Length: 293
Image (cartoon, rainbow, N blue to C red; front, side, top):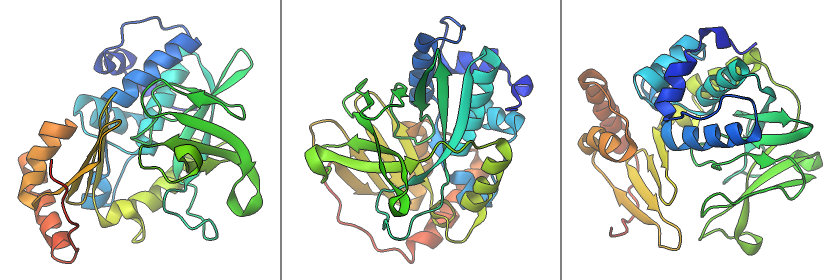
């Protein structure tokens, strides 16, 4: 179903630096999720520059593996699903609604892709496509937690969209305002999704005028003790127990910043197009006050 016959599994695992066991066990899943989140890059550049993102496995592996570019959740999940399928894992794809900054009375579309992996009757949420995601699977039970790094994640079964029951993924940051620092990041149900469903959601995210990925570039890089984002021209760095640091950069600085900080290299033609589009965007956007680094 997930076109694993088109995946070069050896190339994917080599890109992750994974040399471990290939049997479909929890230990393998944990190691693969950690390696994927820390290694495979995350960006929305194709939506911002071209309004086109392909989800076929050959295109995704060429972009994310061979060219070491970044992608967003649909691309990450299509790649990871093909790898899991080829390794013999059993899983269901699902879609979630991102809640951060959303008005619960006016929900966002369900355009975040995730997997639920079934291992010996225990189910695990695999969220490798958020960019800022857990480094290990989270058991799909009320109160399931991931504490593999300084930023923990928590699952609750609760009322979600318009009071309907479902799962809510909570995360905790040093500046989170929720109870005990927890804030709802996304909500989802267990309705199975298929490649064609992701193609429909991807079309909206990559092309629609109201998609935030079309209106400005967003880049993320997740480390074990550092999290960097570039939102248009605003570069933010978070570290556990330290104040968030924010800086506004110039359009001409972005290609080098992508290479140095985010591990994303653009070719000269693409870098020139990116700088040009950012200059257009910068001319109509207010600039926030910077925080000294």
